[in-house]
Amino acid sequence: MVARVRTVAFQGIEAVPVDVQVMIAPGKVNMHIVGLGDKAVAESRERVQAALHASGLSMPSKKVTVNLAPADLPKEGSHYDLPIALGLMAALGAIPGDMLAGYVVLGELSLDGTIAAVAGALPAAIAANAEGKGLICPFACGPEAAWAGKDFDILAPRSLIAIANHFRGTQVLSRPEAGIHAAALDLPDLADIKGQETAKRALEVAAAGGHNLLMMWTKDPRLRRQFAIAARMADLAPLR
Image (cartoon, rainbow, N blue to C red; front, side, top):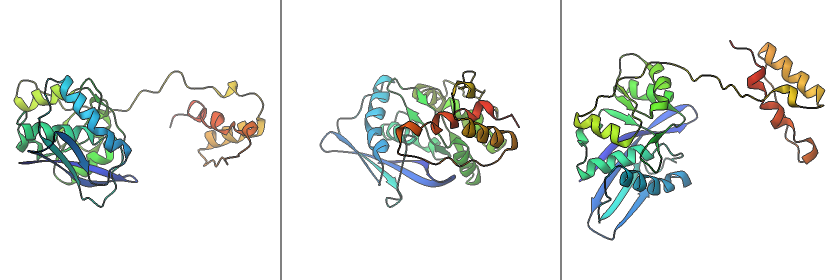
């Protein structure tokens, strides 16, 4: 039996559909992930296994093959953790596989089974909505994803156990409200930079006027202060 879960790959800000296929078959006990994934995708195997174990689900004593299709499309990032884990749970019968067919899934797994935030929730939500599907994303990404529309389903669980309980009917996950992240209170201050008056002036002008700013890299370690200066733009720029 092959369990299938829909996720996405990112090309710039565009979310391209990716089909996660999970098969459990007799053979040497191991888990292989194929489909042109990067290092983060390869490491997904360890995170998924640990998260499932922490959630009370043992890995099968069989060969597990995960294919990320199309195989010729490069896959980057840790957001494949959650779709792989849910596909494996569906293949094991821990959750109903047919319920996953209506969702696009993305999220990174921690070793304790909680679901960590990932980049790209809004493009993924827009793609899911355009395809007539719902979205399963990390709890922290729910408010961002909700901006994609009011009329499609969004599930934003905190953990694997929460999403499993939702599909089993023992827990109800409510749709997140659209929102934005609160600004950090400990932003670096431009006053911390000593000297560099010309660079600081350029930053102030760009921030005040909303202009583009290009900072050139130098190999001279004595002049590598542009990163420290650029990091203070967030504190300097006015809210719009």
